[in-house]
Amino acid sequence: RQPDSPINISRPASRPVSPTGISQTRFMDFVDQGKISKSLLSKIPYEFCTEVQAQTIEPILSGSDVLARAKTGTGKTLAFLLPAIQRHLLEFNPKHGRPSILVLSPTRELAMQIEKEAQRVMGDSIWKSQVVVGGTNVNSEVLKLKGRCDLLVATPGRLLDHLQNYGLKFEHLRCLVLDEADRLLDQGFRRDLEKISKILSGESPATRQALLFSATISPDVQQIAQLYLSPKHAFISTVK
Ligand code: ADP
Ligand code: MG
Image (cartoon, rainbow, N blue to C red; front, side, top):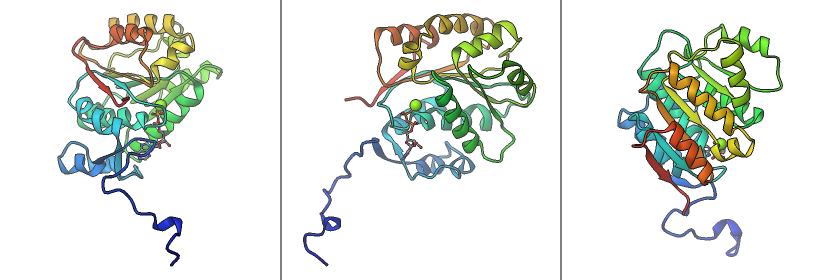
């Protein structure tokens, strides 16, 4: 071999943290501890958790509200999907087929990506995810929502439309996720988020878990966090 070949550059003894913030925690560690079921992991192609996943999975599994700050591209989607699906679907095992988990997302594209990831994690279980987003036919969504929907991903404007005008109810909601909260506010969804909070607080169980994920936490994000999260929430930040 060539002594100066680039593939032979020696690595430092400690694992360097990659740009996506990979941690030393393995997904299998949670299975070994009986916290996550092996079937859920079968659809996850990674061995190591990212830093934010390593830190948020446990508090979410234990039912805490969580405010998490981590850079874009660090795996926040699985950081909430995996423990939320484990706790609220696998363990609680609801039979009603109505949304147990609701994820609010700033854009149609992100919402569709999250829903796809959720369906992948749920695999060939009985659990079903749906997505409702602006710019599509609302009547076909209403029809779709008459079918099974355990996890719903929505953009706030379209969700509000369903709540106010099409009779969508969340009587069985157990977990609400505000994903990319800073972007939700950038997109001008503040008023919608305030209205949604009011409507949901009137009809979902008071014990509902709330999770907020964001790349940045501005005073505006903090205000929304106050509206949705319990004062006793866990704060997790992987931003140094
Ligand atoms: P964020 O929401 O923080 O911007 P995403 O959840 O969209 O990040 O994930 C970014 C990318 O990282 C996706 O392609 C995702 O599949 C990948 N990813 C997620 N978790 C891991 C992991 N543990 N190891 C490697 N890649 C991961
Ligand atoms: Mg994200």
